[in-house]
Length: 622
Image 1: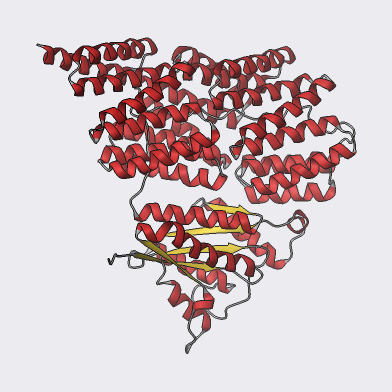
Image 2: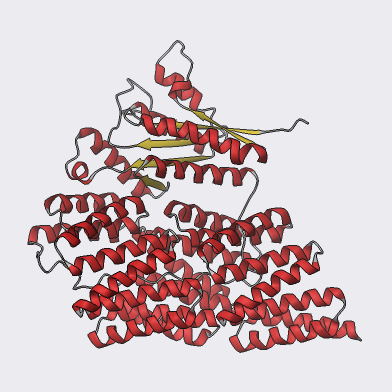
């Protein structure tokens, strides 16, 4: 039996010195075609200068013509810019630059099929960044330029394995685009809680080796650049500080920056070096900090057990030293692990322990984080008024201290409260305020969360195309950062877009992807949401028994967590199943349970929907 394949050409451009990555690129595409793409009707073809046939004319011009026939373009750079291609219309200073500029023209002109441009930078060792030669300097200048323009997202990688992972993620995105795939949401949408701020206590400096003034100035400059979103310049400054003072403190300063920019593998290497140095020097303060940072990396990758172990190691060291500020950070981080797992009581206990210490020490930034985290717990339980109060307490502090990253989280959290209450205009305003700050700071994780929340606002308004665009933006960033929990939310939200469009098969695929991640990470809230979403798909197909099973699974988890909104949602869904079977009394009972909770929590959109269902039910009974 014959079948059709959609073919896409992927061009890779790079200067010399990246042969391993170019070979890995071709092999990854070959493997991806065999395992994922071909059976879905798509085939990708790797294209590079090696594939260009010889001919008459300037060699680079021949390569450019081949590039113009391609659908995707990957720019790969490390520490070399490349050789001069000769006289050319674009005044490019290397063949790689000319290929990039050609791809950019193709992307901007509709007559070409160029769909996307991806920039990948191989990590450069700190000693090279601190003292770049002419070739590396051109790469740095280019990276700085695209970072400042904010037109293209770029990714960093350290190893060939990490490079392969980035190629797979982009191929997966392009495959979804071909299949008009998207990623879903919730029947009664609710944005994910903001991640707590991992605070670095002011006293977390290496007191056994005080930093001299010159090094401190470099560090201050690095963080200033980072806060301004000048990530290339920040990384250069951190590299200079590390070369001048290769201590645990500088390794951790650098790793903290790397974590924030999604360079987890490079950060992990530096943290391990810091742990080794701290152990060798019996420096318990640095050991505690290093364990904390390692925990953050593991948590971001979805290894909650590993993260908990690291946070507890940090706590043990801080308790031994009697360092209350460090203990507050550890309690906060442990609270977040518990919260992700759905242990709200355990999370609340940890956050309150952290808050008690921060209040005792007068650490306002720590108090702001604790208020925000406690607000997330209350919001999950459905106490919107209590959550709002906590978020406003946090915002008052972050505004007073000028903590932009904290303000972004607070605006986002307040937006989620307004969104749940049905105030979409107010929610949108808060989310946009939050997004503006995150974009200014280059906080990719925050941007991913904001895009997701704005998508939910748009979906609630019925703008499915706008919502899909936001969810896909969120997914791209989460894939880049390796944030599995964020990817699970994005898949779920895109599934709901497909469900609203009537694409039940596509919706089911997205919800199952989300469910698989939530099962892997043991994320109870996510499991509850995806069981509910899969129930919607089954019910629409007419499989009432299957839908009922999914709704009941979701309800059990929501009751365990005390998630009132989730409980109201599933009571309503179970009412729909009973109504469809003709069990009007049973349906009425479920709708009334749902309505009582919705009114208690202040869920206006849900209250309106369930009230309408009850009115229709009463008419049916007559």
